[in-house]
Image (cartoon, rainbow, N blue to C red; front, side, top):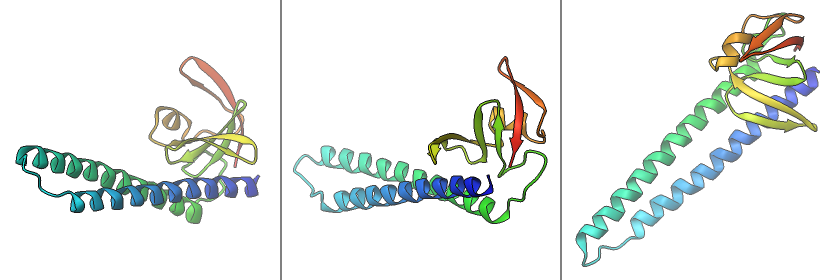
Length: 151
């Protein structure tokens, strides 16, 4: 399963790198649009349009920064996570039938045909799972499942 865990790390990194590229392209496009817009005779309309573009640029820049932080977190975990009996950040675990990866909150990825849900240690489920070990029953939102494996 160690090889599968590495595949999960790599798939998460690939996803974040793809997002980074898309956001960088969107940011470049918006910056180019704001430069190319010419002042029209309707000055207020022009200023309103430019302000809306500036706001959109700000949103994309924030998304880019958040993506960068997630990418750094995943890369840090890849280089520093150690196998442990207990669930820690960087653990891949089987909780009932579900595969969970405690890392960054990225949602669901399909890796080698298997669904893996990436969640943060600070998420409600992440907080419940942290420190638990293989064989323990964990209840979350009215459902109780056994931790079958921790990788």
